[in-house]
Length: 535
Image (tube, rainbow, N blue to C red; front, top):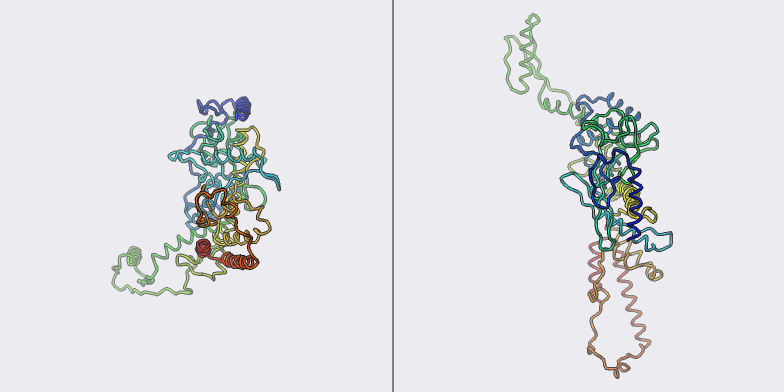
């Protein structure tokens, strides 16, 4: 531990020497053991100035202008459009939270680095333990909207739909019984897109003023404007998590997944407005009034007001001689075009975000439906997208959280552990148990018990704790005299006894094969418990 501390001190001195001149103005003092270069850089704000117009003023031409402006570097206005879509489109919000929730519910495992076919070295195991301890010992402040590990994953996945998500890391020092003093992230917090920008070379960095000062050196309201920055400064080392996810090849400014959905969101908004107007007139016939061609303008205006009030008031007064008729509106279809447009928008949202539509159509009174086989196919497609989200989050955390932890504590990031996010399905346990049963006779020595315990969530038994392999104790005295040891040895079994044992083993093997073939997880566990009790 002493060598690691010396390496960290040397690195901190180098970082302090290379830190910006205005860094000391950010935070007056830092906790013991943390260099000034790891201090908080951005000033968090509760609210930012909104740049988009009101929802009713957003037209197809405005959306086209916004998306084309994003290609020229105006990413803030495009992000506000995406955020407004998520805020006002229930299906989109549901789909995105469904993906994020599925990833957050996965099992998180840190695996130590190892060469192909080799076991992890002791140093790789130590580094894996240190990274795991740093990840699990995050201490965010809930009142400050700071993230722990799961919150970090949630905010990283915001880039899955919007293209880019940036988080700042705040570090702290804590003590570990096994590892000693460790520098790890105390929390992360989400960074508003107005704090960073793209330069002319397509590189993302922090906004700064003409003097090269970062956001802390700017006036209080500077972060709430969208003026193009004079200079883009690189993100300081070990301080930011930059998650970029492209829906298609090319520049990241054109890569957000929500770009194709902008037009459908706008169509859904217009359709909803039309639906509200239609609902006001639904079931009410058209009113038709004939008036004399010589009637005055005042009489015509009064007639119009009376016809309008009939829809809500249910009465009207007309001049003498006025003819009133009620005309039933014609219907060309059972479904209105507005409703069809809303359904198409939701369906395209399901296809783009989840890759399937069956789960949304079969629930909540939706039309559609499908067989069990079709449902499994659709669920499999969605599962592949969830796994892709998990891989994206795991790679980002491995490269931008785990490696900085190693560099800060060891001075280098070799033998970096890998984060795995995995989910368990009911069919997986049965399939894995069958594979293990088939491999055990030939490769049983190569299957570690730790893998069996972690795969099936079986705790390691304590010393003396009964297990499935336990047998009833033999009815022997507690202490066997030395003179009786020879007499207590049983004679070798006869041929008939060997045949009986072979038949018993064959019967046990058949029972185990039948248990392994069970597809239902509950039946599998029940049958396995009954088999163990019968031994």
